[in-house]
Amino acid sequence: MALKDLFRGKFQDRIAALFVSGKNREEILGELEEQLVLGDISLPIVNRLMAVLASGTRNNDPREEFLALLRRELLALFPKQPRQPLADGSKSVLLLVGVNGSGKTTSAAKLAHYFHKRGRRVLLAAADTFRAAGSTQLTLWGEKLGIPVIGGDRGADPGSVVFNAMQSWQARDFDLLVIDTAGRMQTKANLMLELEKITRVIAKIAPGQPAETWLVLDASTGQNALVQAEKFREFSAINGMVLAKLDGTAKGGTVVSIAVGMKLPVLFVGSGESADDLWEFSADDFVDSLLGK
Ligand code: GDP
Image (tube, rainbow, N blue to C red; front, side, top):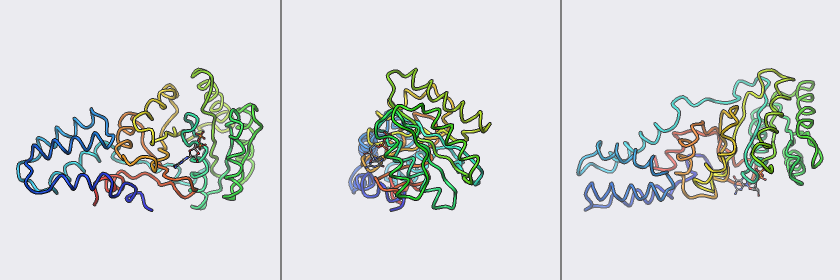
């Protein structure tokens, strides 16, 4: 499946159904508004979209006119020039953060596989030593995908796992190191201290790294994903997002709400439990999947 097919036939069928004959513009706008809200686009964004649609359409405008305007406004909610992270093949470290259960470990494996398939020499690090199965889970993925994994025992210092992984990444012929971290701590302060320690260890060995720190969010929780993200707002190093579990929501609007609410670029989306269920995010393809082409 391609990203542009991810929400095909869900939102778009309902939108198409609004334009049956006999409805006037007010009725169409009212029902469109309802569908956008039901599609899990947050109210302030829906209000913005509706204001543009109300001023930009006239009675008897064809469906294409409404949809073209909606498409343009939805696209405008995403950054204009999306960056292509980790595309140049240079030696880089990618740190993944997020709450427990958000899909971090699975996303680490999927991302490692994504870049491995594109010819990168990838190393995985399992710095989630807090969870009993954290390291084992990633090691199993590594075996399945043919990607080496540096791990540690449960309770081991994540900083030391990261230190070992950084040493291997530097000394051996790897160009991309993907680090999975723990997401559950007794307090938010502990979690931030641990992440700061990990980034210090990385930067000490390789100044300028981690080049990428991405927040993994569970998109199937709808706008509650923004609540998950709350813990990480203080962690200023985050420069992108991975939205996992899009297969758990029929409501693509979540992606819009999260992207706008977080003011961070959506770089990858995951939708499914196998290694290939990951796509580099493209706003064009995503809006196509919502509205049809
Ligand atoms: P972590 O605690 O953040 O590392 O989360 P995990 O990667 O362990 O994921 C938690 C659960 O969500 C696991 O059962 C995963 O198989 C599942 N999961 C992760 N990503 C996806 C996804 O894109 N789709 C679905 N359906 N399940 C996912």
